[in-house]
Length: 431
Image (spheres, rainbow, N blue to C red):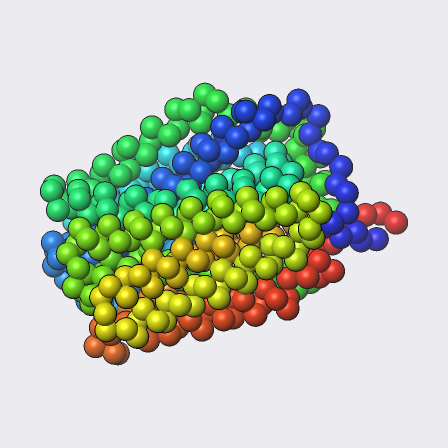
């Protein structure tokens, strides 16, 4: 057996007519909207636990809120490898459509639960179904966009990821304040189902026939799991995705609570400042992805360019520690928004680097699934660990913020020293 790297030229695997540029970008926007809806649905819990009507109904302590926040991520992580496997072999359209419908219905059903156990079960179902969204989205991007456009494409997907909590937090809080937490869950789930109409009508059926499935199975087998496990890039990508995601999921799960209960903002104002933070990272993600794409199109090295943006984002995000240490509310709010916004420099470029630039096409779904396992693990850890740190520190956020800082340093260091082209997973061929 011989091996070739991810940078080698890959042969096209589909004989179907390529999509037009207009249709490709339109479907990309639809994918971003789907990711946004998934993040609205998962972030509804962070708004609920900041509301006294919800926490008193279920008698939640800080640790209880942490475990409820993290329940979603345990099933979300476990099912990512399966979903990556499925989209590599069976296409994107129908597996995604089925999972989308399941998580929307489970979100709506959350509003009907009367026990904590029932609510946890719904969160586990939502997590399992939403684990399809990212592998499906990035598999589609890998099939339909070149390296010169992958930064913007991933930036748009990532923007959907961040606009979810940006929009979801203030809207969810408004629904809770004006109606109830039950109505909030039901509305979030039912409204999301509308997305399925354009998805089913507009997206080409890519479920392969018997011969195509055999070809895709052969192609996927060209990067065996042993090659993935032997690649430092694969392991390094899981580390950086964990470090990046720990901060973003902390903000998604705990920022409304932090701003409301420690900084003294009203519940509605905490939702508004959560919006500013996530809108900032989403906007910068698109701009940074576009800027890196332009540099690469002009001849800059793709790996070095995306690594530079990624590390700069981690450095800027580390200013979160300044917000935690200041007594001034205005400065705390500024550093809160600034640090998460700076992480947008990392968002699209890190994803493009570890899911497209350094990964061979046949393994994108599987590697994305592995990375999403690390991402979801970060969400579970951020929820549970933060709850525990708050419990032992009398609800002081200094320790949780210091933990974020440590992971940001680890992410920047791993990006610099481990994400190297020569350590990418290899494609095996018959000698």
